[in-house]
Length: 473
View (tube, one colour):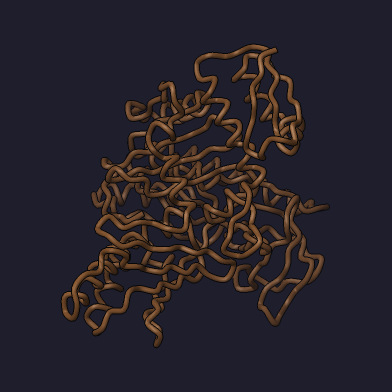
């Protein structure tokens, strides 16, 4: 998300009516980012793992984790030598994707609402946004008094006004997590997860809600949880509201339409022209097309091409962020003669990426063939991977993934029954979804809340994966 948008111009929308949470960030009347949370492994989870293989040629080791794929631990991310069979305390620094397992680190950082705790380093870091000298001196001295065993603390700017007692309580909570990890390491008998971190979605929600960003929640349990969070920290909950419309929040606010567009190949540009976005396993290819926007010849055509390319640059960045595309991105802009035009295109990309240029995005520049290359750090799965199973080719997406289809059905039922439980019903479902509903307690709980009683579930092979039929009994 480009950092030009002011906090007050943002709106956070939370859909928590199904067996997943979806969060949309709206700025300048446009959906800028969508997150999905379906549980599972999280970045910053802490594990006691066992080294299964040391690979000097890769300067890394493979570590067996509880309940998931083995993780890759770079040797420069942990102190001391490693050997096979060794028990280690590790933290997930990057979630696995495709056929790659998670990436791990031995440099533990435990994140809280007010601070980040590291068990070593003797460093107290006060954010520069706290510019009152007296307050900075007090915080530095107080936090140093807490760290009697060489711990490091990075204070968050959002905690600038926290009381000493609140900061002390936060420190004690985070340190207790580390103590539990140390104790589990000493008595390790099998790989196990010792700390479940906040998900990326939780972090997004809490950061925005605690900053007073307007937030609308569809799902009473999530609304009550967030209201309790604000009140527990003595924060004002005036910006938090529950959605009470007859339609679902994402439908009412136009997010469903934006989500559909974010899963498509073609994106039209407001000023004319369009871009095509093709995702593959190896890279993301983006083609800029003038369409009916190109008119004139000579200098006029060159100027028009540049205008289309500059508009495309802004849209490309928005789409890369919205779709959470990581890895190599190759852009094929309309031909632009001259160095000045190419420099303007790159400058437009850099400006739009904003804060992501500090490390998440690396610019490769133009190739001899006129293509522009950049890389963006991966942060979890991209949006299309979360929504679909791959089809027959790398650039074609097939049927909705089982989890996506299950939640589509739950949301459809929630929309159909909004404010009007139907009592005892028969629910006809695709066999795969019927089995998921029969096996998963969360789904049964949601259905019970929606219908008033748990409906009968009947498998119907004639239905598509994301279709359902409600029949009164």
